[in-house]
Every structure is written in structure tokens, then in C-alpha cells.
Length: 319
Image (tube, rainbow, N blue to C red; front, side):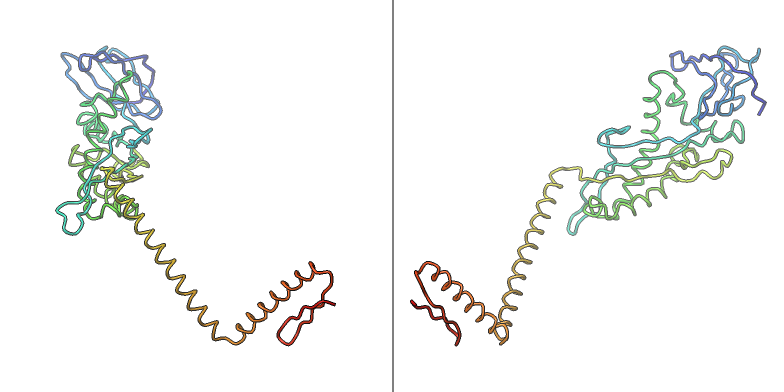
């Protein structure tokens, strides 16, 4: 790759009937410098490293362009609110006994990844091939206000369908209750992460989506797209409501059983006490004490009285 020397102010390209300006790459981008024109066609010339600029001169025509390729962490968050998309990945869980198919559940997933921005190999490098096979199709180099829209469309047609295909296969190993409760989510997340790279490669034609820690100086160590299964819920809210009622009935029945068992144990303990002489003597003493307290209270109301206790009884009489 030739030494990058001077800055260029801006580049103009007619793309899809819309004039777009592409400048030198930012600090977290790799620039793909193309020679373009009616006579030249579209020919890749060189990569521009992050933060550097292309050499200017007679060879750089107005129709030439530099397309930026992200060289840092990117995410795609599927969430009911506050995410990049609010459309979940819907899959069928394992069928319950006697049922032909399982209930449908929504998977709310976040993906973290890096584009393989390695320029090793020139025109056949991962960065160039990603741009020519995937990025250019969705205008992801667009620097206008539509940039986010194009980027999202690219991911909706690559990572998302690949994850859908893998998730539909893997989710069938778990019941709907296991997924919604979270009991199986770690296993499903791991299974999707392991198979996603292969499905992405089949869908896009190369290993272009790598791990968040991808280092472009080691292009062969692409790694896995990070998959975070944040939540799972039933696609049909009525199923969740029915499950809630079922769980409520189970917990109520368990509470009633516990209460009945408690009463049985209390009765058994009481019966055992009746046969204990010490406990019987203690109860008799409590009764005698209550009698004495009652007579003492009665004496307070009399002009005079005498209390004689002992012999198992209490005598009260006038003085």
C-alpha cells in the first residue's frame, strides 16, 4: 500500500442517482479508494488506513471515491423500546406432549460485532469483498441523513435473517416455559453464537462479521459475533396470561397444603403434650394462678376480705 500523504477535502460520487460526498476515513474507519468513471469503470486502487488521507494529484478524478468501512465495534439491538428495531425474532419452542408444534416465543437479542476491515490481499481482501458483495448493495457508505437507515437495512438483511434461521433450529430443543422463565436462555444463546458465523458466511459469501474484539492486523482470527439473549416472552399474550393463572393456582394450592400440614403437625404436638405429666401440672398451675388473680380483683371491690390460698384452692371471706 502506497504511503498516504496529504488530505483531500471531499469526493463526489453519483450513487443510485443521488450525489454523495465521500471524504477520507475517520479514526474508526478504513477507506476503500476506487477509481470510477465512464471510461475507467469501477476499479479498486488501495486502502486508506483509519485517520489517514489519500494522495492527491492528476490521478484523482472528480468521479473517484473513497468508501468508508467501519473498523470498530458495532451493535444491533432488538428491543421493545429504545433499541435499533422493535421487531423480535419469533421462533417455535419444543412441542408439549400430544401437541404437533410448540408455542411461539419472541427473542429479544442484541448483537455486537466488528466488520472484517482487513485490507490484506488488496482487491480480494475481506474489507473490499464485504463492500462489493454486501455494503455497496445497501449504500452503507452514504454520509447523508439516511446513513443510519441504510446501515440498518443492511443488518436486517444479513445478521438478522441469519440469526432467525439458527434460532428457529436451536429453540426447538427447549420448551416455551423454559425459554420464557430464562432457565434455557444461556444454553440457547451459546448455541446461536456458535452456529451464527457459518450461517452468515453462507448468506453473505465470506467471513465479514467478526467478534467485537476483532483486530484487523489478524484477519484470520475473525471470531464470533457476540449474541446477548436479553429476554424471551410469548408471542401470544393470552398464553402468558394463561400461564400466570396456572402458576397462581399452583401456588395457592401449595399454600393450602402447607396450612393443612401445619394444622396436622400442631394437633399431633398437642396430643403429645397431653400425655406429658409435666405439661399437665404446668397447665393446672396456670389455672390456679388465673383463679387467684380473679379473686384478688374481687377483693379490691369488697370493704374487707381475707384470701387464703393453698391445698389446691383459694378461699375468700369477709373479715
